[in-house]
Amino acid sequence: MKQYQQWATKWHIRLFFAVILQCLLITAHVFAQVVAVDAPGFTVSDADRSVDFFQRVLSFEKVSDIEVTGSEYEHLQGVFGVRMRIVRMKLGDELVELTEYLAPKGRPIPAEARSNDRSFQHIAIIVSDMHKAYAWLRQHKVTHASTGPQRLPDWNKNAGGIKAFYFKDPDGHALEILEFPADKGNPKWHKIAAANPNKLFLGIDHTAIVVGDTDASLKFYRDVLGLKVAGESENYGLEQERLNNVFGARLRITGLRAEAGPGIEFLEYLAPRDGRSRPMDIGSNDLLHWQTKLVTRDATTVERDLLRHQYALVSSGVIALPNGEMSFKKSFLVRDPDGHVMQLIER
Image 1 (cartoon, rainbow, N blue to C red):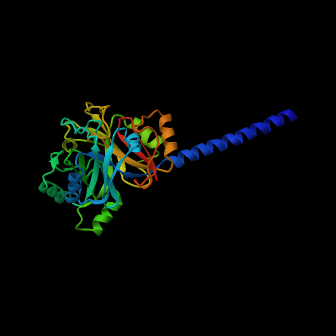
Image 2 (image 1 turned 90 degrees about the horizontal axis):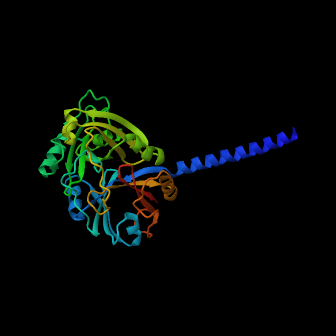
Image 3 (image 1 turned 90 degrees about the vertical axis):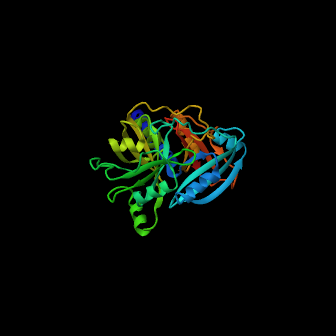
């Protein structure tokens, strides 16, 4: 009996410490999750031209403009001999980041790129009045990616009444303007519009990416990085086809969000299924490259977790950056299941 009591005591001690260890591991994982989406961004061929477009046409304001070079940035971006000009632009509370590679120059966006290719990404800019916003864009001769503004049909419970239009920036990056009806969208957009009746462009609601398999993408963004599903819908019909400029388009759409910042939206084409995979050789200096900044409290732990799940890094690892050059101390780039690049930053 005494031996049994001793064994039971040891067993309870072991169980106690096992539970404590598991709690610590769970706490560490939660602590390391993404806490905010800082800014979507992409590579541009001419920063001055892009800044002018975002300022003059879309009402963004320039908030920072820096030039960086050195081995840290080579290892961060996976590009040798790099010299980058990075410009951050703000609209309302949200930011977009434009990066020009002064060296080495990358390749342009392929002319045959389509909205259902898995290299596709865009940012959705909220407008207070679609009719006026479209007229303004026409006045500035933007390149259409949609045939024109589309109002999604009322039968679609989660998306009915939303108005949207796709167009392109001077380099061919896809952009969207979006107007929510009164019963949809983040309430903040309706408050901003009511408080600023003459303000046409309000802010960035989300960045959207084409994915091949929503469930596989959820494992990356929700299960590992900790973003939460905020909404879902299935969109199809003539309006959706004309919006995406894809005949027979039927999309499964899933929106995710962190505690702060714009959302990340999955666009899975249930039909047609002929969208091309993201080219494996796309470099950070190519204009097809996007990278979305995600804020974490512990970049090293997140990197370890991503590697454990066998996701591929663009960077050589977690890179410590020179003091004062950037608004964060550590960073690394990682590819999601479809090759979209996320930049984890630790401030």
